[in-house]
Image 1 (spheres, rainbow over the protein chains, first blue to last red):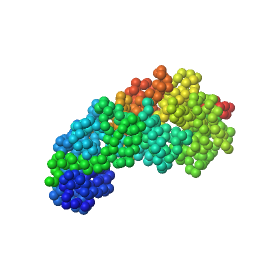
Image 2 (cartoon, each protein chain N blue to C red):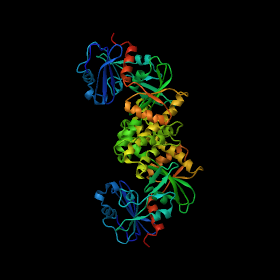
Image 3 (cartoon, rainbow over the protein chains, first blue to last red):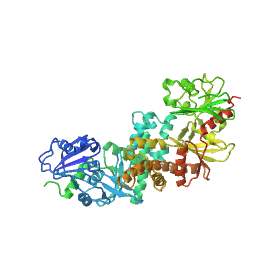
Image 4 (cartoon, rainbow over the protein chains, first blue to last red):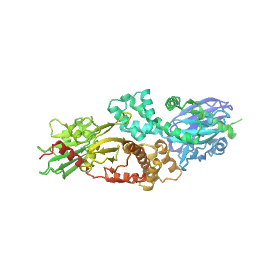
Amino acid sequence: MVIPGSTRLIAIDWGTSSARAYALTDHGEIISEMSAPLGVQRVTAGDFAGALAALCGGQVPAGVPLIASGMIGSRQGWVEAPYRECPAGFDAIAAGLTPVPGTALAIVPGLICRDANGVPDVMRGEETQIFGALPNGSTETQALILPGTHSKWAIASSGAIESFATFMTGELYSLLREHSILGRLATGGTDASALGQGVRSSLREGAALTHDLFSARTLALTGALASEGVADYLSGLLLGAEIAAARGWLARQTPAAVPVTLIGEPALCSRYRDALAVAGIAATIGPVDAAARGLWRIANHAGIVKR
Amino acid sequence: MVIPGSTRLIAIDWGTSSARAYALTDHGEIISEMSAPLGVQRVTAGDFAGALAALCGGQVPAGVPLIASGMIGSRQGWVEAPYRECPAGFDAIAAGLTPVPGTALAIVPGLICRDANGVPDVMRGEETQIFGALPNGSTETQALILPGTHSKWAIASSGAIESFATFMTGELYSLLREHSILGRLATGGTDASALGQGVRSSLREGAALTHDLFSARTLALTGALASEGVADYLSGLLLGAEIAAARGWLARQTPAAVPVTLIGEPALCSRYRDALAVAGIAATIGPVDAAARGLWRIANHAGIVKR
């Protein structure tokens, strides 16, 4: 990445498999960015300093503050940034920023919350995207959905993340697609109608995922589902199961209807928007640069943007 | 397998990965048996005749009828024995016996049933175990559970299988254990209390499997679940999800409480019995040789046992 002279902050969305670095002005404008397969699991021999230099284009510039969020702050990362308890707003996140000794890098803490039975849930990186996606100065209660390997549904209110829940939709889809007998029935191709069929099936009264998944096999076996539709049908069943469970979770958090925003990769957000529509939930798609915006806002709040 | 002179039927439980052959007297007594890794997926170049000879100890004896059930009758097997519609009793099964040309072998058909929405479910092999486990002459409505890779719950009445439902519990457990981030958290060891904890979690109001599975990670991360307990906790979550869904299915099939029998591998049946007890369902464990008994009964009913 080229670091222009007007750079006042280097912000890094540093995940498990990849990392994306941004050079930002003092107004939070992105003036340069790069992505590299330098996620926490791919940094060899713990050489995070080397990975950071590579993300900066070869050398970490002197005098520019850096901030990162994601798995880089996990136990498997560079320096552990302990989870902050929900509800957590900018103050809590800023107070939890964890410096990496010998560098100008601060790591954003992840969040932890507990359900009514005391069972914890965690996020790392998504909190930053949520802080980047929240409308400026908004105090309205809203729901945010971050689809992915481990999808997150969160409730935010008055600039704080109140609570959230994880759904392993993406990981289960990969497991079924790559390693199960169901995945072997699937050929390439997409089929929007099979996706919708799966979503509707999981939204029905009496739906039961571990039973319904088997119908991908029986419908294919009896010729009712083409092999080109098997993958999307499976995806629809999992997505429908997520929506069915998450809307119940949402209703327990906030009985009144709230605006719903999707944050993440555009194609995936659009797939979720279509599936949510089947369930009668209208969702808007948030900004694509939510991570960079969130990192800048947190850094700004913490007073570490170079002035 | 040694084929004693008093053998009147050779019965084979012929599945995907392994096959078990029994020599039976005219009273259905097992006088010899052998098991071999000669399941349908392991028979090379379609040499089922060679596999059959091997299961008979080298040569198929002349003049002795043979019967087999399981994946050997599937499209990937030797000769396809088309599914029979439920309800199906001995008459329907006997009428569906499919001869293998050039041999004295008959293959038991699998069963197909449809739910209220017309979605099919299928079994192959389990119908034979159920026919072997049903008490002689019983007309009482009862539930039978066959735990496994794809667990089956069935309703039988007056000697016929009325309806059934599949749950992919075993396959999902293997996928999670071997390929997921959750499996990587698990170390060897068993933990009955973690198993019960998982079962109870999935039986609670508001349980949602794709969310709850993630708690194996968060509970381990926060030290609330030892790594030795992770595998059993996952198993408990899946088992509880099966029981929660299946008891709903059962109640829709037959509102009154019915006796519940577990059929299958003893250790697995005992694990299911404990989990069912958590849900307040008392179950007894059926005969271990249900497949051989079922094959003998079907052959006897069809009049193919040598007299």
